[in-house]
Amino acid sequence: MDVRPTPNILWRLFVLIGVGLLSWLSVDDRAWSRVSEATGDAVPRRAVRGAVVVTAVLHLLEALVVGRRARRAGLDRPGRWARSALVYGFPVVRRLSQARRDAAGGSTLATVEPVAAAA
Image 1 (cartoon, rainbow, N blue to C red):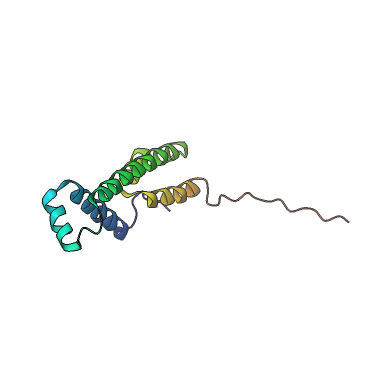
Image 2: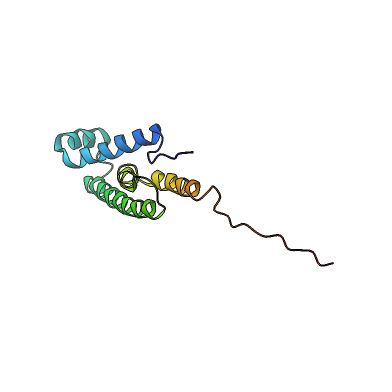
């Protein structure tokens, strides 16, 4: 089975809408003032901006790790795996683990030789 680097559509929508909205609120003063008026400034803008920065750093680190692991596993197009991890995050790491298992022949468990019974 060929494992694709992109997660399912629901996860993609969740990430793109969620991170996109946070990013938009962190840079657009008009949008932030409307949200702040509606919510009573329940969450400080500094926290939203911090969440955007942390998310970006985590996704960048995941992309670097995924790209290196895909290259070491000999998978086709490791750059595609890295770009998917940069955009979508940790679900790509899980998909990469499955692709590596498939490339290695299925199971990652060691084969145990039976012990001969003493006569």
